[in-house]
Amino acid sequence: MERGVIFLCFLLFALDAVDGFPMNDLISKLPGQPDVSFRQFAGHIDVDEKAGRSLFYYFVEAEKDPMNQPLTIWLTGGPGCSSVGDAFASVGPFITTNNARGLQRNLLSWNKVSNLLFIDSPIGSGWSYSNTSSDYTNGDDSTNKNLFTFMLKWYEKYPDFKSRDLYLAGSSFAGHFVPNFANSLLDYNKQSKGLKFNVKGLALGNPMLRRKLDILARFDFFFSRGMINSELHQQIVKECNAIDENNYFANIAVDWSAPCTQLMSKAPLVAFKTDDPRAAEGKLFDVLRDHCDGNLEDLKSGKEVTMVSYEVEMCLPLRPDFYFNQPEVQKAFHGNRTNLSYAWSGCFSDNFKYNESDKDLDMLPALKMILQQSVPITIFSGDQDGIIPTMGTLNHLNKLAEELNIKLIKDEAWKHENKDGGWKYIFGDLLTYMTVKGANHHATFSRPSEALFIFTNFTINRMH
Image 1 (spheres, rainbow, N blue to C red):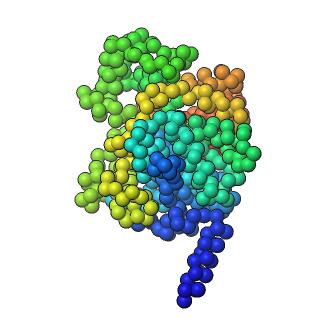
Image 2 (cartoon, helix red, strand yellow; image 1 turned 45 degrees about the vertical axis):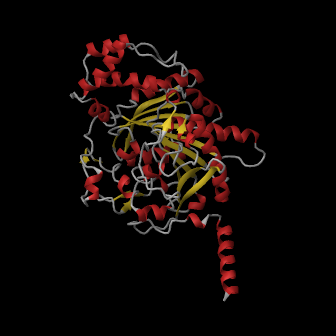
Image 3 (cartoon, rainbow, N blue to C red; image 1 turned 180 degrees about the horizontal axis):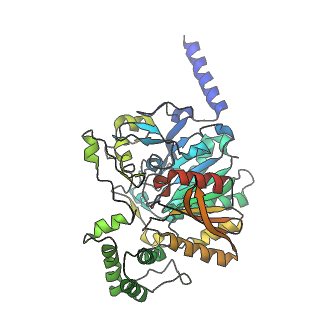
């Protein structure tokens, strides 16, 4: 009997080694999940065992022929939001049911065309943690170092993916994470005699690239939409002129003047016709639609939480906060490794901190280095986003193209399923910018069909 058990264990180990996947991280099935043909894995990878620092990941095979499909890493922003949680409201294979107690297929998941790897980063996001309290004070450098170490160790767990085409993607503050990460991988390639990261492209949704200028772009956006009048807009232009596209110095904090600060506080109240600053700030995420009027207490009481506005299910991002806090879900994910009793949060856990000056860093130099190594970049932005308006991002990319002497070769409308998709700008052979009509700050959530179309045709297949 003992020999049989030993032989079975050896056989299972051998199968695991041949398969090239860590079967201990295999998710047999998530609670409430429909049957699927692809596999899912999740777990922690220690990036510093001495400090007890560990990043959590969720890996999903491509829907069809995963061993011949590329690998795409998805990082979400915040900074401080869970990429794994975001998977269930954006590009992942499932979305929650209306009562958040089960899952349904996301028919517009990016795993239709790629294997997907979601990483909770920085430390303190989702289920990523450290036993060293100082690790919860994050910045661009520490985040990038942890991601780089994670990737080396992840490849040890999944050796079949070492030579696979690799795409890096993300949204919002991933406009910092993804370019920094890409440059680390590309720099490693220059000195490595062995492993080479096969970086094929970047896809960035509504990325924060130059925060101080993105803040100013909001007021141009308000004025262009008739949300504030010419007088208020001109006052802001006059008083808030400390920076521009040509003198953006990331290491110098901008001390907005008192009149500028007052005007910047007044404009959103006028734009959204409210006297509540928090309500106005919340509307920046989506200037077209009202926020979800449900809450976690509704879900706890067994209610369905749903609100469709202009074809967008506005309550979808709320529901993972309930789903991920169910004990059976955490067990299936191998998520709460430390068995602590704190609630899972999609964004901004209590002990999470991020270096404020890093938020102001200029990301154009990082993008420039990537393009100079012939790695294409696709950027797409929702035109209903008031946090990082499309016109600000277009200004940044015009500046980047000018510095690289890249010509704008296309400036035209684009269509999706015979409908107006937005506007398309193509700079040379490597840089593409597409606005997405009707999308908010997270185009992958609010216009998932268009986002999948862009990723498939302008990132992976490189249409012009």
